[in-house]
Length: 404
Image 1: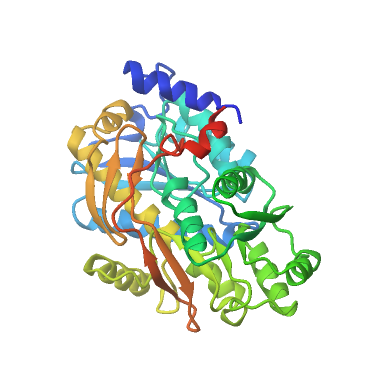
Image 2 (image 1 turned 45 degrees about the vertical axis):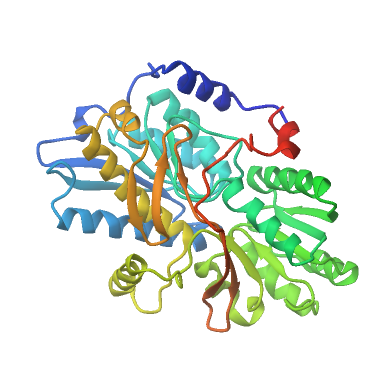
């Protein structure tokens, strides 16, 4: 697969130390003596709202906590909230508004890789800084994005290692029809070829799709060892309901999902997904003191029936990482903040995390979870140590052809 233009731009920036010279959308109009404007952009409507509303809530919680503690460099954070409406064109348009009209010092948001890739040239053209909170397919590293979710070697590869260790050597791939699932499945196929695993089928459906009986009946008929699921949004509700109707159980054919977290489990229905697997870097059940405080704060703010999840805690972390970088730089300027990113460390709900300045990704621990009958996810496997991000999979010989 040919490298994207973003990779070329990034290589020049990181190798030669160049600074982008495009016009900046975060001039001093967004910063006063008392306030600093930031942008928030998430799908508050459409098929992705099932996942993204909770991310918006987590960002707002972090902003409110920071403001209550004195703000950033003595300034109160003032958010401007935009709805990406589950449409990549809308994401790009709203991002342009946040940078050009609202003069946001930084922006938090995005979920699908389609939305991120639509916003990427907007941030590069305006020299803005997007904090992207969701795991993704890798093969990207832009100087205008900080990736606080997992890249491939921190989620998908550990998930494949786990399945293989459990003796699952035949995989059925099902995903939404856009860049993340298709690229992820190219990586999964390359891994499988190198590890004597069989891909029995590779099926895609549009975002928002609800008719899965043909696919679920095929899974029941062919009996793969496991299903690797890269569906996004509310399509997961229909898929798991129809999988259960087809008689496929977690005991017979476990489904490992990389975009289903606690929020989606509730929408899917516990009876339809109990026993199935997930791969993330955080669960509500992750056991540390920081997470206990975080879960209590979130449920106190939004209700005891609400759950926490990996993308929303990564979004929550983003605000604190930005605050730490701004304070280290003693500046809100994007170039100054970017220069201060390397080595920024915070105690996060997922554990201690550190920013890798070379890739602008976070060093993270991989976790495999299993959905329990209470709708939460129990951690059943953890990587021995935090994993340094490798977005281009340069440390894996079998992935060489993926980079062109």
